[in-house]
Length: 187
Image 1 (cartoon, helix red, strand yellow):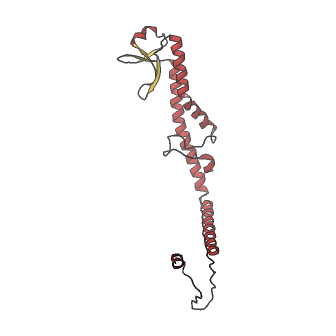
Image 2 (tube, helix red, strand yellow):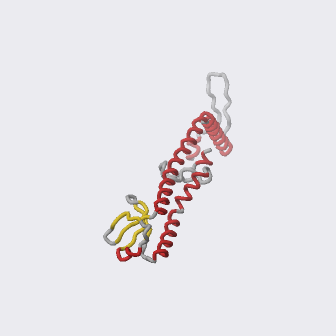
Image 3 (cartoon, one colour):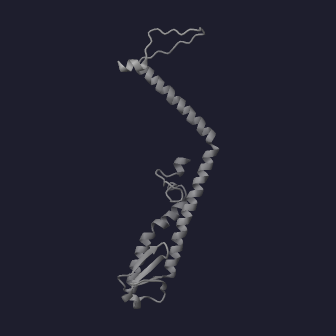
C-alpha cells in the first residue's frame, strides 16, 4: 500500500504537494495537470492578448495579493479593450483582469487547495490502513529480524569454522579447543 500510494521522494511537509504517487488518484493527477499547465496557459494568454490588442509590452502575471492580472504600460492604456476590468493602478501603468482570467485564477487556486486537501486525505487513509495492519507488519518485521540474525550468525560460523556448542544438563561448562573471536581476529 505504501509503495503504491506514497511518492518515492515525497515533500517534507504534508500539504506542499508531491506526497502521493502519480497514478494513485485520477482526480489528484488531473488537478496537478491543471496546476502544472498554468504557466503555459498564462504564456499563451499573454501572446493572444498581445496579438488582439496590438500591445507588445502587455504582460500577464501573478502576485499573492492581487492574484492574476494583465499589466499595460501608461502609453498603451488607450488601446485596452472595454472588457478589461481595472484591478490596480501603478506608477508606470495599470493592471487589469478579464472574466476569463478571473475564472482561470479561481480554477488554479481551487486546484492547489484541492490538491493539498486530497493529498492529506489520501495520506491519512493510508496511515489508517497501515495502523489496522500494524500487528501483522510487526510480526513480519520480527520474523525478518530473526532470519537476518540467524543467517548472519550462520555465515560467520561457516566463514570462521565455528562449532556449535553441545548443551548438557550437567552443572559445568567444559570448553575444549576454545577460540575467542576478538582475540583471534587481532592475531
